Amino acid sequence: MLIAQITDLHIQHGGKHAERIQAQAHLAACVHTLNALDPRPDLVAITGDLTEHGRPDEYETLKRLLEGLDIPFVMIPGNHDHPQTLRDCFPEHQYLQSDSPFVQYVLEDWPLRIIGLDTTIPRSGQGRLCPDRLAWLAETLAQAPDRPTLLIMHHPPFDTGIREMDKLGLIEGRDAFVQVIEPYRNIERILCGHLHRTIICRVGNTLASTCPGTAHQIALDLRHEATLSFNFEPPGYQLHWQGRHGLVSHHALIGEFPGPYPF
Ligand SMILES: [Fe+2]
Ligand SMILES: [Fe+2]
Image 1 (spheres, helix red, strand yellow):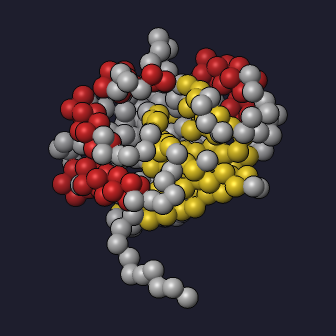
Image 2 (cartoon, protein in one colour):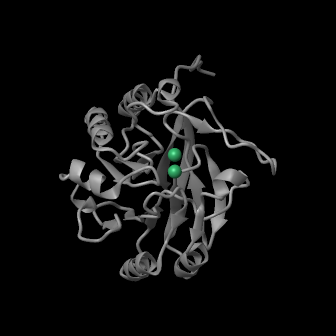
């Protein structure tokens, strides 16, 4: 199985940095890049911050752009999203639909079992996994302890050293989350967004990682007093390939670069 991960699309109409970020044009370029991949991924996982303000018009634009994607995709909300508006705009995405206040789901149709977790708190940038969400995760993991499993969630379950982002991290429920996943040896990876760059950390008995944004990146600045800022390092995506020895992750860039030159 081959999974492409993209994240933090931040589709927006207006707003402080909309002109500079050009989120829609960047997503169009990303869709073009993913469609050209050979072999083509089986699935695209989009790990949150789909829109900037969670507004219906932003989700409509998102939908129009993702209609150009020739690959099936699944989404989870990030802190910039509005879960119900997301559901309403994508009624055909059955896995998003439920009576729960949380957009959590399990997909059983793939060689990798995919569990989507909702780490959002309404009107907050921080992440949370409350007892209800963790109880659902514990129950869901217990149903298939031997199937290779992928968790996807917006807020990563680790501190990154980018301090202003860590203040907006998975503050509540992080330790309890680790307790839930620690007994399992079948969780191949925890794929996250929110950080707009590639960062990897061991969590429990697996690896958790974040992915570049499709538009703007968060500046790598580990100084204690660093001001949170974004830049235009090349946008990217990740390709997660299920090989003989487990899930192998490739970091890839979106853009035009010289080459390839055969050796
Ligand atoms: Fe983001
Ligand atoms: Fe975020």
